[in-house]
Length: 204
Image (cartoon, rainbow, N blue to C red; front, side, top):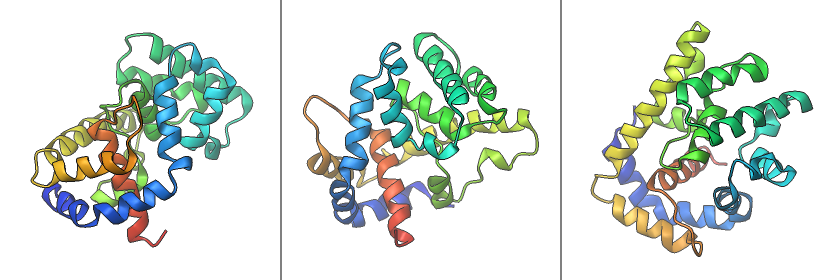
């Protein structure tokens, strides 16, 4: 498993190369993320424009949901945004979309509502050497593992932010990718960097 200190050391040494790659492709990635976070609300989420951008950025389109199932997805999403609902309840309610425990998509909804919360991503999990909740044998175990993984990621990232070098990485991120009247959370910064780190190590 990749330890917090090792990850931060890697990010410090590669920050400029990683951030240049992210900046080069920002129109397809971080700029869409910023638009989502600037425009998200319980009413905007019901618009065709918001759903189109969110589905594209977070790759919901890759799930190949029917029109009806996608409508259910955004109904669950809107309900979560508008109400005080626990993350466990959200993950459970997502079962109504297609009967599956949607660990990644539920965490993306969580992050959209609260950008201080991490996203469960298969590539990030591979980079950290962690098993995904999908490996659990039962539906109940997968739901529990999904909630636990968000908590585990939160703690892991929080430890990263205390390591020597993270402040340097964070400042460099803002220098490359700053947007007027918008502030990235530290969680999103490390999420974006880890995703690019994984792609770079695998020659993508």
